[in-house]
Length: 311
View 1 (cartoon, rainbow, N blue to C red):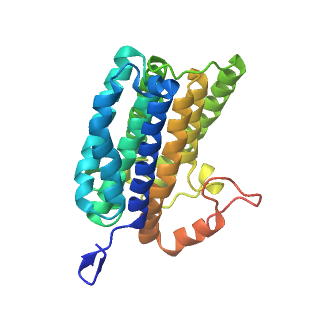
View 2: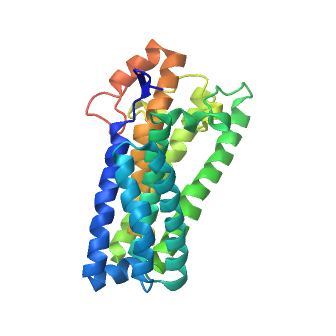
View 3: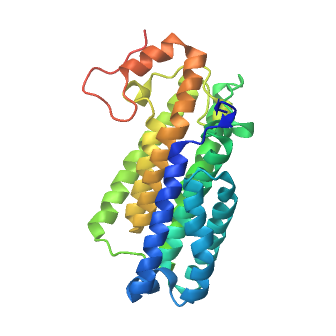
């Protein structure tokens, strides 16, 4: 935790977020009072005056105080934002109205929670993501057959969760909230082709990880050896590339722009939070071998040069 002259330094990015949230909240309430279209799209038939009486001080004012550096205000604005988000989700799903309000509050709730944690802790505690069962650990020596079986089970679970259950749920909510858009058949066909290609890449990557590295995609069973064969010769994170492409493809097949956005947001989170932790672990375990590999092979897009070959 960063301390200067005995005072905890609050990250400016978190305070800036709450400042933006305060301005956005004030602008939204102004629009609600001035425009029936905005009111209906975001509040449906909910009573405006009683909600404004509570929301303006607990959301707009509290966000302003948090932006000014008052950490106690976080304990007001974050719980309130999450409570409103849950309430709007239930209301929009039950009534098929106020879908834009529900979506905006879900985004505000997630962002407020993240910014609130940063303000309370004094930094972004990204290491929380790789603790407990998700901590980086080298896989035990159990034989390639068992490693392949574990990889297969993990793949079925994660693909089933993130590429089937969650997208179907998002698509259902998108339709229920009246946020769906019509897409041409060609878009769905493109999605099918992309899904097939991305799935092939994902399987190739997982098998390469298991056979060459004697490990699985799960952080708690990391590869015992640095994998530079197969798709890893061309890009450092082929499984991530495959997963993101699969998510986008599923969104195209479902005709759901929210599923596409979900996949793209996942890529940003993975690249900015998870990847640095994973690569720090790889450098710690493989040292100069990984540093050389990282300097030669692109993270996301294969570069126009000869494929990497292990020394």
